[in-house]
Length: 262
Image (cartoon, rainbow, N blue to C red; front, side, top):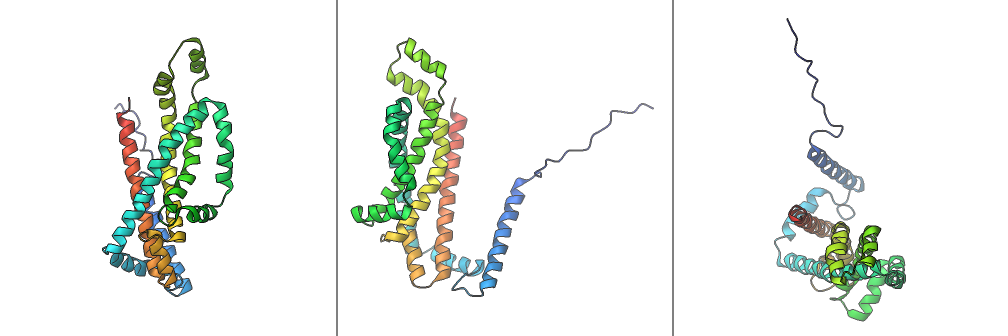
């Protein structure tokens, strides 16, 4: 009797067949560590467990105070991104094309990078007041990140293409549209995710410090002042959830853009 070819056993990938399972394992592990930490401290005033925080979160979310705070904080984050991203792209393209522009803005990047965020918030607060400080601080923090990413994108343009510009007359508009914008788009899209995360952190930190009337950070500060630690954790969880939701929405938009892009 003739035998058929040997059948090799199915191979398993080193990371497992379902990475999502490991994500849930990570979440459960964090919750277990959280619960163990609360039992070590033994006081909800110092470190509450997941259940008291969940109960306070459920009671906090339906309130008008929470909804207004979430809406205003999200608006500040969105405004900070809308102002900083287009301006940083324009400055980044100009600085990437002309080295003199890059040298001009380099001291500004160095100063912003070396200045503590809290110092920036306090200085801006003295000039602009409670409501404008979170947005302007977010702009100052996001602007260098996006600008540097854009400069790197411009510098990634093939040098042979730049040599062709010197030989054949091409208008600046055509260079920008057909060469520089396609070159910087991957760098911009990559910088958007990190910039959005940074924007949430900076805005909420500024809100905690300057305490606008309606803000997630103000809710955290009031809960801390009243020694309502479970509520402080609940405001923090709400902020994390809102930031994660906005990150997921941005990822969805970018993935659809990449599919439609020729």
